[in-house]
Length: 145
Image (tube, rainbow, N blue to C red; front, side, top):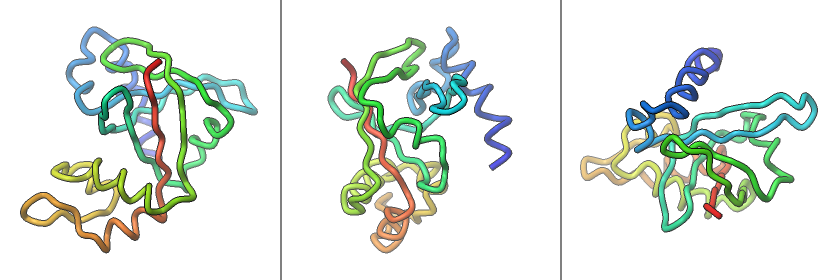
């Protein structure tokens, strides 16, 4: 995914700028330090909003999210502001991952495309595609403090 290495820095800059409104209705940026390198990382993610939490998904094969495994609190850039959040991850319960994916991709062709889930004409995802995708994704939940 070398293309993302080029795109993500620009998206992260926009998300933290006064022009965040261009993307903040759909994207947040998780900020964290690498466990081994200590380097600061900014990763844009599409989200689904629940009351005071935001759920995102990423492929389990992406290694960046493993930096969050032992963290219970962190920061995200949301609507142009740095926000303190509680962090929880789910990568073992495929049913929960499937539910989260369903919320994220329903009526959202872009997220469905990236999750490799086809949508029916009414915007609902195909169950078989969701089940396959759930085995490949990790759920990240950020709850505002």
